[in-house]
Amino acid sequence: MKIYLQLFYILLCSFLGEILKHLLGLPIPGSVLGMLVLFLALQTKILKVEDVKEVGAFLLGNLTILFVPAGVGIMVNFTAIQDVWYILVGVSLVITAVVMGLTGRLVQFVKVKFEGDYAAPHSKEVETSDE
Image 1: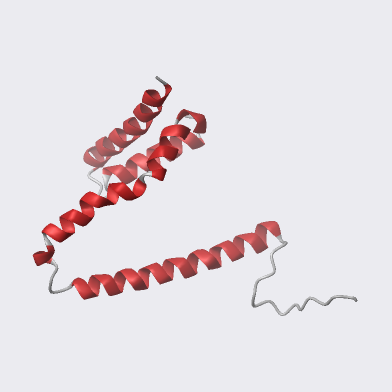
Image 2: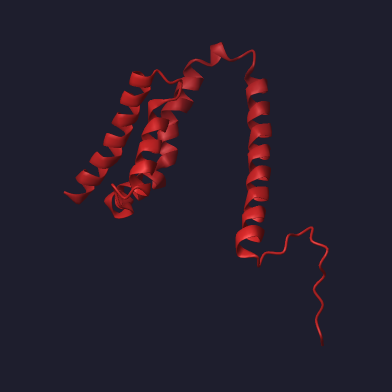
């Protein structure tokens, strides 16, 4: 019964996101708004992590299977993108590299700023050992 309740909470947040999208007329997908609703519910302690932990872990563990319908849809409708597929692949690769680079820089910044024990690889400090 616990699993069903956890799934209900996640689906409820997704449903609320869809309602918000239609009520507010936002150009944001309802599923994204649903994630924001879930995030706010967790931050405000309306829901606890334990209330969605098992089903959330299951969904994250099986996330790749959720991309299969999108991949099949692209292959079925390939004629719609056959003239620009190389542009889409190029943009995807560039954006992936940019996101990876920015994420790395952000992690370095946070570690230096808040933990203070991280020495950046481009740091001028050289470790010496007294042997």
